[in-house]
Length: 136
Image (cartoon, rainbow, N blue to C red; front, side, top):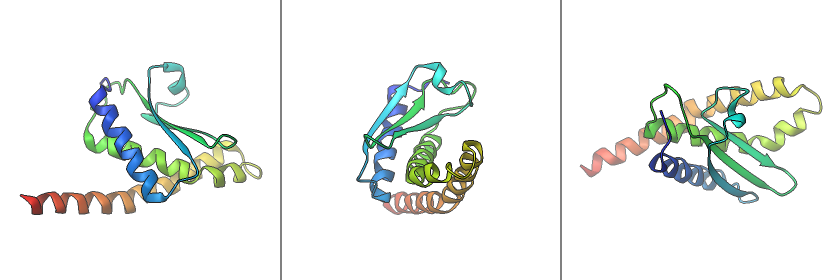
């Protein structure tokens, strides 16, 4: 499924929300809808965090084509949360790469990110849903 402007706007807003939540003030943030297929060739990812430690610029990139995956608000929110968590762990990951291979570090970063998704993100979604129901 194609990621349209409306989808990208949701992704961008969620990236901003989580950057603020985690206090990642030292980074200049860009959210990008990338049409460049080569960026996602290595792995079939829905999004990516590309960060430059020297300039302190982080690009949160969403793939423009999710293939067979249906683009939903919840999945866009989860994707944004995931990419911001990768930025949260970016410096630690770079330091760990001195001792361990990049593949090993990436795998462990994703273990931590999944734990954050299953705790912080799910708690946020439950709270958000509860607040929306109380408004009805």
